[in-house]
Length: 625
Image: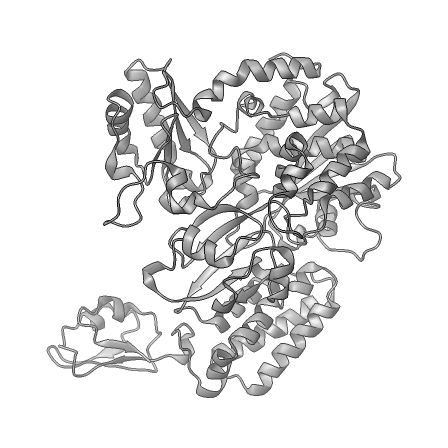
C-alpha cells in the first residue's frame, strides 16, 4: 500500500479502483461478475448474519466461483425488521430474513441458474406479490440516503472501496482548489446544520473556530450516542467510517486544526474496531498524517472513550470527559470554539453532521440546499422504533411529514391498532398526537409542535401505551443521567420522577398535576445545560396532549391502557371460566383459587398483575379492569 502523494495520484487510484464497485452500481443484470452484499453491522450480526457470510464464502469457493462472485460484509441497509438482509448486485435482488441454511439455495437457484428464491423476496403480507428491487419496496420509496449513502454498499474495513466511491476526493478538492474561507462558505451556503439535536448551523460553527486565536486547534467528533433506542451514528461508523474521517480532515483544514479527536462510547465495539482500521488505512495511504497529498497540510485523528453518560453528549461535558475530568457542562460563553479541549479552540460536530460534509464538497452547496425545506436543508436519519411495522433506520428529506414516515415508510401500526403518539427527540423530545401527523419534519416545525428533532430517535406508540407511564419512563432515564452540577436538574428532575411515580400508583392529586407543570417550566428555564433544559419536555408535551389520561389516573384511579399495575385489576368472568386450572397452576403468586371444573377467583391482595393468567387462559375468561 503506497502513500498517495498528490491529487493526480489520488485521481488515478480512484479510477483504477472503479472495477471494485462497478457491479454494485451497474443496472445490467447479465454482468459477468456479481456481488453478494450481506448486512454485517451490530443488529444483523446479532440476528445471525456472520454465519450467512461464512456460508456464502464457503459455497462460492466450493463451486470455484471466486473470480466471478464477491461476498461483501457491508453496513446497514436500514430495514432492520427484515434482517438479516442479502442483496445481490448488479441483479438488484433484495432477500429478507435470510438464514444460514438458505445460502445453498440462493447460490444454486440465483447465482448458478439465474432464478430467484421467491420465498425470501419481500412482500407486504402473505397475500401480496413479492417485490424484488429495493427501490420498489414502500420502506425505501420516500427515502434519500446521503449520510447513509455508502452503508449497505461497501466493505467498511477496506479503504479501497471507499475511495472507489469518490472517497477523499472532497478532501483533495479542498486542499488543492479552495481556501479555508471558501470551504467554510460552501458548508455555510449548503445550509447544513448540526444533526446532534440543537440544529446549529455547521458553517457558522466552523467560522467561529476559524476566527478563534490559538496555537493549537482541535476538530472533535461527538460519537457518544446516548438516546434510548438510537443507533444512527453507530450505523454510520460501522458502515462508512471513512466519511467521518474525511469530513474531520476537511473541517480541520477549514478552521486551521491539525488534530482530530473522536469521542465514542466504549459500548460500540464494532464501531471502535472499524474506526481503528479506517484510521490505520488512511495513514498508510497518506490521507491522514503529515503533508497530506503533498499540500503541506497535516491532520491526525485519535479516539477517546466514553462510559455511556448521556450528559456527555453536551459539548462542554464531552470535552471535560476527554480531558479525564467529570463529565459536567459549563456556562457559555466562552464557547468551545474559543476555549474547548485543553482550553484551546475546538469545533464539535456529531457523526451524522460530518457524514454529510464530503458529498457537499463534491456536489456543491446548491445541490445540498435544494433538498429539504427553506429553513432545514438536506436529509435526516431516524431510528424508527416502537409499535410500527417497519422498525429500522431511515433517512428522509427534511420536510417529510410524520404521517409519511409512520404509514408509508413505517408500514403503519402493528396489529392494525390505532396510532396514539410519536416521540421525537428521545428523552429530550416530546410526544405528539394524531393531529400533528401532517407536520413536516424540520427543526422549527417540531419545536412549534412542542417537540424537537433531537439526534434522531423516533418512537411510535399505539393505543395500548399509557402516556403517563411514558413520561415516567423518560424521567426515570434522565434522573440518573444528570451530572448533578446544577440544582434544577439534580433535585428538580428527582421531584418530577417522584410525582409521576405517585400518580402511576393511584396516589396522585390534582395539585400534583399543577406541581408537575410548574416545576417542569422552572427546570427548563433554570437548568445549566441542554440535558436539564429539555428533560421536562416529555412531561409538558403529555400534559398538553394527554391531559385526560393524567386526570383519569388522579381522579378515577384508572389506567386506560392497563399499564400502571397499581391501577388495574385482573378478574375472572365467572360465566366463562370452565375451571381448567391452567391459570391457577401457572400463577407465580398462587393468587388464583377454585375447584376443578368450577369458576375460579383471584385474590386481589396476592395478585402481582404479571399477566401470566391471561396468557395461559384458552377461554378468554380473564379480564383487565
